[in-house]
Length: 430
Ligand code: PSV
Ligand code: MN
Image 1 (cartoon, protein in one colour):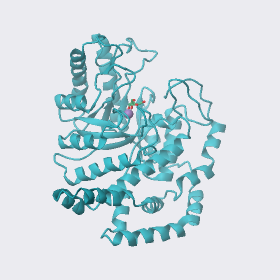
Image 2: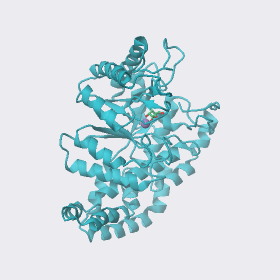
Image 3: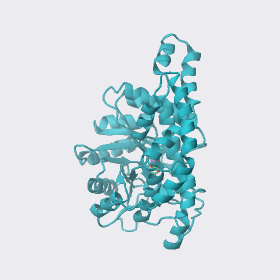
Image 4: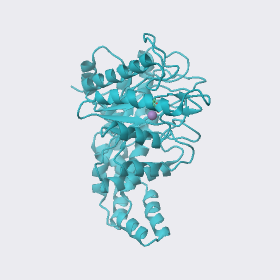
């Protein structure tokens, strides 16, 4: 039995208020799109089939290394995080899966956790391992690295943790393990740059060997932080080389905030797909570094261009096209539920806009070296406001036409503030 956290009556009542205007906007957009041969209902159906996972850790207020400013009613355990993720899914209807992080989300009964999620209308996405922090009970410190550590026992501990994550994931119904390590150096000379990669590859291959037949290992690269001189899997080049060395089940995961400033991320996406190594995404946005800002809040055009490459890849799947989509954000100054509702909408908008690109016109212009018309093929799609398509798909799936309005009217957060224990101060996410 599902027990959804927001009153269905509230959603229905608010939708009734907005329905007429939505029909009007949808019809107008339908006529506009029809003039270029696009069937709006077909786009709506694609939108209805789109989904992106939310990170369990995104349900709480994030923080910087300087401070965290908790809000009343934020979750402090996986059960409460699931409840908040259920709100996001119930209202927005594009986030049916949660990506858990271990040991942050550790429980004693994972079958029970899976059933609990299902009762909230949720499933589980990729499991994320954590060898970038020490845990109270662990034998060896990760201060000098994990999978690439000099010390063999430390490497083995990191391998064992990843294998435990796979075992947990099997019980939760996941089929992907996302591995991000913070291993690296802060000083030139601190470690040998080649031998540290050798150690990483050797340890990673032990994790790879433990993958069930239908699982993938998603390697997440990041240029810097916490290591500020060198990082072992620093960029998509290191990532694809490692994935190629490990085998076909190893793919690359692109976190949008993990690149040097101004890097052409959409080209990286195209390259990874070209070589059969595009595994998935952590969506967020950034201005300066790994800012973990809300998706599309800084550079929505870049997000659209990433989705444009994804549509190209889907049309030309080569050895297959099955990237997993996840959000990975840190919500430092907003209510995390509102941020994820808004981000999921932005991501879906980019997905929809990329489908509006006149591909035949784009390809013809490319063939003819007609730069301006090729650019215009993208620009025209980017400029279309697809909000009515998303709202209609959402409404038809039982979600709210105006997600933020419904969320605020539900007073969910203030209700939780009465029920939940207060979060301590401190820094960082959990
Ligand atoms: C690292 O910055 C990262 O993007 C990885 O995905 C981690 O698992 C996540 O953030 C957690 O904070
Ligand atoms: Mn990430």
